[in-house]
Length: 210
Length: 210
Image 1 (cartoon, each protein chain N blue to C red):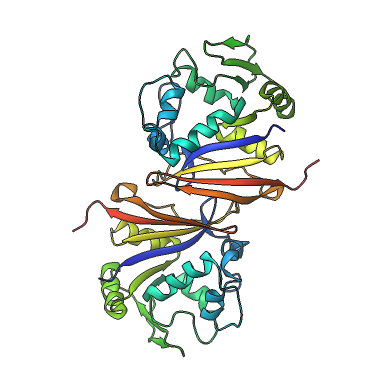
Image 2 (image 1 turned 90 degrees about the horizontal axis):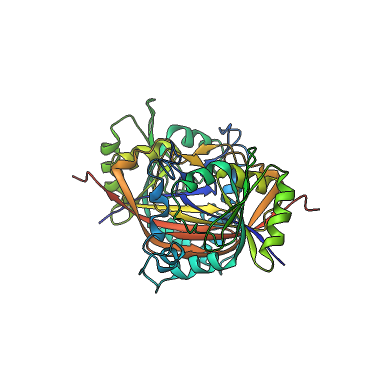
């Protein structure tokens, strides 16, 4: 059955983006440092239709596996707007992307299989739609932090992966700010390490699972 | 040569203790959850002169190695006061402990080899004294968060280990609050994982090393 997962890069001090993020400053001040580990990798570059890249590494294998499991995405409006201004014409999703927003807008179809749907609905309903589109693949809760927190707090996430960069940002957008910790607990599945990043994989045990 | 290291337990969201910590509430609200992984281990229990415990695990080996490398400790006054009210008569250090404080107090010698020295001096000087006592062993900057931050920001730390518990505290004392991030960077040495904790080991590259 299709799983719901969160998968997000983070600084050692818990930030998933820098301050002052927006369409003209994607990922915020110094935020790209969080994802530095993936930029040289072949699987990342392929995803953006860029040539070359390093293919012989655990990091590359992990990233490829993540991309391959995604059948649909859910993201917040700010993340979409930041991306809209910066993604290539062939947006890097190749699947349905549900954008949680109060604005109504027609679906936006991009070459390469990405379609953005703009939805003003309960997050449970949006997840049902994403699951339907995902088929046998999984649904990724892409971000930002608030959307991840909403889905975690609602008990709707099955797996939680974070990629910890060995950097300290001091300021930025915190991943864990509005977590309702009594709603779930985490169980370590696996940890994989390279010289540039540490991948932590958790199962999410939801305490009020229907 | 003797190394200076930080070694500290942390929640996944970056807290080394809960709120409202003090002599009557050691580690703060829910703070003991951060260290839950070590309580059943033989090396932890031996350290406190308790019988039994699990000895056949990576976690136990790691903890034993940490205890064995410590030749002297440096800690803040609040950490000391919290411990003073709760440590057994044979305090669990078995070496010199320098307590940074503005109060003057005679050295306090405990059975089992722990002597607490109360020092109102520049942190560099205190480190020199600790290094002298440590001999071939290493100096541990024990905590709390502010003392760790002071030593990191001063470029005096060689190695940095954190033990990440798979829990989210939401509130508490943050490890990284006052870091001056331009002063140093981190280099991943190793990561070791068990079902209850993830150990992250870093070298600290100090940018203004004398």
